[in-house]
Length: 170
Image (cartoon, rainbow, N blue to C red):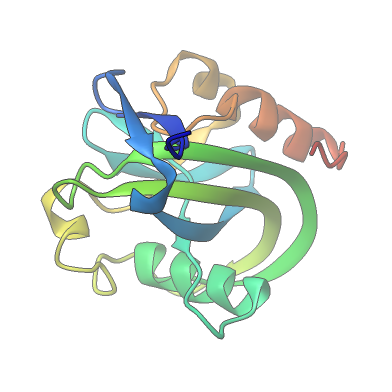
């Protein structure tokens, strides 16, 4: 009996295309994202023709908290404090910035508070400079109509965060 090759379906978040990928080709990517709300606005990263939360991949040997703080600083220029974890999810996706790269991502979303510093793009990685722009404070009432490049219901997550509804979904 021949060995079966296990596969998963990965999605390209830019165009919605999918591809069946052997599990052996997946890179494992735990990721942490910050939901930063202040004065009736949420801080988002413009990416391509939509938005995403500041955050990204956690490095090997780095704690989730340290990875979150580093990623938020790199992508926004701001230092923040970590608050509660409000959502956990996962994603199988095609990297839009590295050819033939597929990820199995674990996604951790945290409330972040007390942003300090100036918004900048100084911490962007080279590949981020190709598709991301300077972070923007978006009024909460406008988030429902935005396009997001992530697999979560971002407007609902922002609403939960704004209401203080910190239920973790697994």
